[in-house]
Amino acid sequence: MTWRSLVFLSVAVASSLSPCGSTKKKKMNVLRSIAVPVSVYFGVVCAPLYGKGFPGAGGILDFETLEARGSPNEYLVAPKGACPNFEGTPLDDGSPRRREAPVYPLPVDDLRRAFDSMLRKRYAIDRFAKPTLSSERTRQYVYVERTPLLRFPDVINVQFLPVDDQTSTMILHSGSVFGYSDLGKNKQRVTEMLADLTNLPRYIKNRAVPV
Image (cartoon, rainbow, N blue to C red; front, side):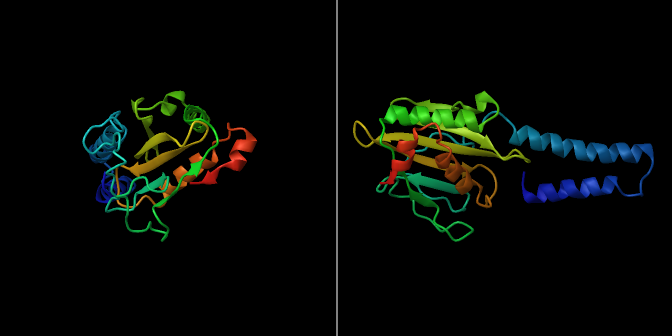
């Protein structure tokens, strides 16, 4: 739903509060004018198709060829040298839309389990912590997280990468499906996820270093 549609919905709500048109028929027409766009909105935004590879709805990203969007509604954490084509304009707050990923002194499969544990703690409903798409071969997984109020879907891609047998890192990308600006939400989400890897032993968390 575009901002123009949201304005239309607001006008419809305001009209329902107006003293004009007090007859039952007019009230029913106002309620119908509200119910239809609201139903369409939630039918589109809450449809269970995001993050599953449908065109325009998000899916597994190719990090080798990934380019920055024309809109600042995404954020990327990646090792130095990864995602070489991802260069774009700064975010709305003037900060870069990517940062280097930390290296964790644990095997790559342990890092994946740590990330899974973090997601289960992050989401109240367990099924939201399960990937909508996955590639076990490349250790890449797709998740969908929604904004609290309007339930806009944002698609998260994560790929776990071994550095050597005992250390690992990741590529983590979060991007909005709708809208031009995300008001910094994707950067906030990725930053929170990295900080919320609380199931790692304290000495590992403290020793995580930039690539």
